[in-house]
Each structure stands twice: as structure tokens, then as C-alpha cells.
Image (cartoon, rainbow, N blue to C red; front, side, top):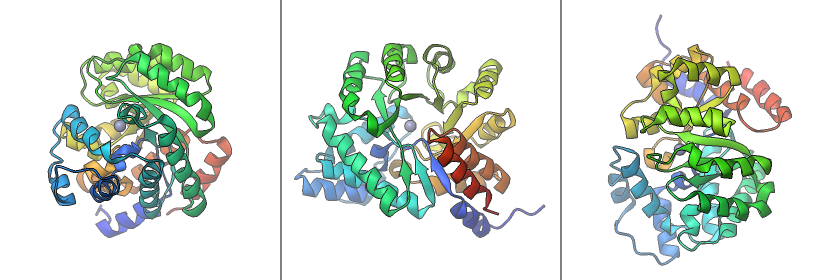
Length: 339
Ligand SMILES: [Zn+2]
């Protein structure tokens, strides 16, 4: 059977109303925006043009990505900067028919530079309200802790968030995973659960001790979702348990191709075959130069994904999202109307 032409698949991908569950707002900072914020805040950059910035995106593993990533976000200083950061992402989401988002932000990456927690979260929350009203993009925010910082720092930031619980739906864990297992944050995550927050954690691809980390996420933390989690496929018992619990896995194909040189197309198919709720996401789209639709099209073009498979992945994202059941039903009905 002949595969449908690229244009018809692109049209289908565009038409699908989509949910994104793994996107770091700091990872949506586009090179042009780095320049305009640097100018407004009187910051001298080592790069002369946005093109030079993109040319420096020579990631080959997680640490090489993180060093450029943290350096760039120094241009984010004021509440308006964070508002713009989030709003620019929501505008791109709307243009790609991404209708629902659970974005991450990393407060410690900003408080460690002397930016107040409230400055960050208030700017993002204001953009969320405006995006829902003016773009029709709904969202619920997830606060991530940097796992290469201490558990004490994570606990302090969770307490800073207590006055903002109306702005948060969950907590996550990201940054450099090596020797920073989920167990390091068990107390912080238990406290977050007590505060009524949902729990997710990165189990990044091909990290040291990754199977132990996934096991801890399930047995010790009792996460509500896993970010990445592709390596679970190496252990049948983990796969069975993830499927039994109906846990979502937020897979990021183009990000994986950048940092582990593999689009993980076969792995995503394997997850679907095992009844695991895989979803497709962009992770840090400004850095990997691919938002949601580019990730879906990468699976079409480089791994021959079909419309049925894309539909299943998109349906999974709404199903494992943390929105209300009522909103979920509404979005799923809209999705099923797409031919
Ligand atoms: Zn991520």
C-alpha cells in the first residue's frame, strides 16, 4: 500500500487538536527572543546574531545541552519577560492546533540568579490566563525541581509555592540525572502529594542507573506520570506495571535524536503494542528546532508512522493529562471528529 503524500499527512497533523505534556517553558526561548530580552535588560551576549546562537546548538548528550540552556536563560529577568516567554510559546502552540498544555518551569534556575519566585510564577500565570482567553489554549502548570541541586533547595521551593497552589497542578523533576535518583527527593514529593499536587519525574533516555530510577518512580514515589521513560522497555516487569497503572509516558522524539541520536520510533511503537500510554512532546523546542507538529512529522517521515498511530498517541495525551474529566471528554470528542 502506498503511503499518503507528505502534504496530506502534514494537513492531518495540523488538523488534530493536540495536547502537550512535556515542554519546558525555558526551552521555548527562541534565539531572536534571547536577543530582544538581552537588549531590553542591558545584557551583553557572547553571540552577535540569533544565527550564531543556533550554530552553537551542538548538543551530543544531556550535560552539553544543559550548559547552553542555563546560560541562555540569564536574559529572563522581569515578570514581563516570563510573561512573554510563555506567551510566545502559547502563540506557537495555537498556530499548530495544540489546544491544551501542561508546561514545566524551573524556578531554581531563576531564584539562583536572584530572580524572585513570585516574579517567575506570576508572569507565567498571567500568560496562561491570556492564552486561554485570546488563543483558546488551555494550560495547567507543573513546577520542576532541578535534581542536581539539593533536596533541601527543592523543599524550600515547594514551600515558596504554597501561596500559589491555585496556579499549579503538579511537580516534576528534571536536569542532570546522573547520581541524582528519585529517592533523593522522596520526602519533597510526598509533601507535594499532601498539598494536592500531581507527581511526575524525568527518567531521561540512556542515563546511568535508569532502570533503578524508573523502579523508584513506581514503587517509592508512586508517580502519576513518567517523562521520557523509554528505557522501561528493557524490563518486561516495568512495562507490565506501567501499563497496568495506565501511566502516561511523555516521549520526545526530536529531543532524543539530538541527545541520544535516536528518534525512538521503534520504541514508541513497542510501547503502544504493550498497551503503554506513550505521548509525543517537544521538550525544549527552541533548542531542538522542533515544536509539536515537527515531532509528529519526524515520526511520519523517518519512521513511517500512520494516521492511526498518530491518532492513538494524541488520544493518549488527552487521556493521561491532568485536566478535569469533563474537559477531557470535550477534547476527546473534538479529536474523534478528525478524519
Ligand atoms: Zn524534559
